Image (cartoon, rainbow, N blue to C red; front, side, top):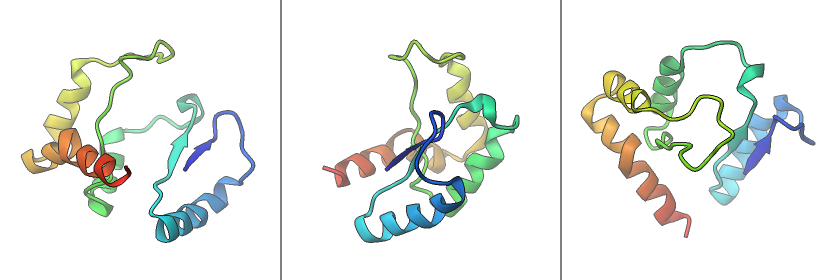
Length: 108
């Protein structure tokens, strides 16, 4: 389920956790948040990614914006290096490959 926070939405952000959990438990749907990063405080993504990985090791999937022309900061090899420098070899295998294969195999 995608919640579009960038363009406004019908649901209050405070209720998204409860709604997201209900949708996952009842239908096995994941939640995707579409946000404008300009509205977020500047943050270090690594602790956030590590916390997501700690909570759900199958929750991170690496992707790029190679087909997108809207990204203010386009994909670079540094994005891959960031994962390689901060995650173990097993975690990298999950992030770069296994998690997406499992996710998309189960959603068909």
